[in-house]
Amino acid sequence: MPTIVVRTQVKDILKESEYKVENMSADFMDKLDEKVHAVILEAAKRAKENGRRTVMSKDL
Image (cartoon, rainbow, N blue to C red; front, side, top):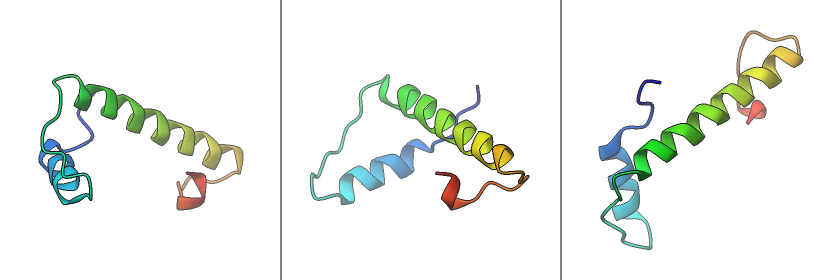
């Protein structure tokens, strides 16, 4: 499975959050990619079930 989420962008989100977290464990990005992948596939399934070939925000 290809990498979906960009590490530098995730680090920026963490730094800019109210929590000021700056570091990630080595396995964090792998797990995050897995979750994002699952969300994308679930949205595609929902779009297909609704007779669409376009994934929309409402599929999330």
